[in-house]
Image 1 (cartoon, rainbow, N blue to C red):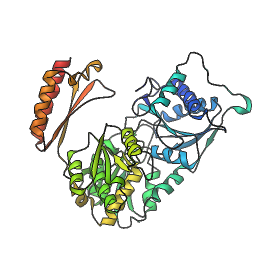
Image 2: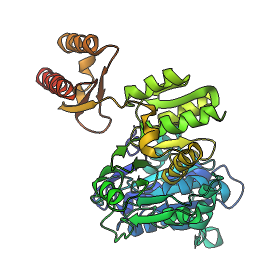
Image 3: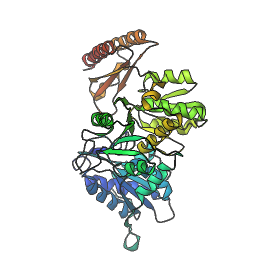
Length: 449
């Protein structure tokens, strides 16, 4: 991670950490780095979620873009994956999203996509940071007719909905679906897409007021969706996060279905139909052991990457695979889009259920979800990796790995952003798992603080 860029763009509390002044510099430096090699009037598209701070930050960002002579196209409120798709459709030089995804309203963030719809390489993020902090502003300052201009695009949502609907050849007639839009970026696009496909639709949390994004709703708070599915006798519930790049589901019994299970259902269907390249699903180290056991039973290779959709995408690009994601519902159908896409994922899941003539509560049995217990150990940032060399901690981890071997596992992972070491133990008896995870976490805290 750099000075400003984290694992997923530049984030912070809006107007205190992520200030308009910082975002202006970020827009100016980012626009210059991403368009300096072009031999035409550069064009950058900008989308955002529903946070009240979005207008303020968009104004600062677009001012920075226009100050280097690039033109800014404001898409308004659209899902993050819409920007990744539309940057290609509109032949733009870059795309920028103003969003903090599933975070609370006080946070916001800036995320860049290049002209192919991919998140930026580390070296480009570093170059942007260097220009942002340069004492001698070497970025050109065009004037007169060479200054960039802002325009508004009114077709972004319709163009994106056309795209996601085009990825299926089925209709959803006869399916009653509840969707939770998290009062976020999918509040217009998701209902349009599912209505277009003929579903009997009930949409909740689709009245954003600038302050209620992700507030007790969406993919991080699914209680109201579970209740709505049962109350309405729906076939399925779909939950999105604030910027629309994640999708989780609820079956007809009101039980939650996570990203691992969605990948298992869709991956098996893709393999059976010859569309799962290399018969491989790319998951992360946090994915449930049940997903890997499912793969073994069905001739599907399950690759593991570090936590983060960017690492899943890197693996897809490197190995020529086409499908992968995270337990959190951040799932990439790489044949269609270059990033996690919640609405697209939901459509592909519903297509699979329709074509296999299964309800979600039946389809989810393709894998057994083993209990996972996650306990945080608070450790000074400078000491977070010392568990790797501390002999007492290493010995305890080895004992636990032996204890759960074959029917569970132990995963220790320092947080990338917080003074925390995460202790995750997976197995069959949740009571035993919780006790062992607590014991190990307290041991780590005691020895490393």
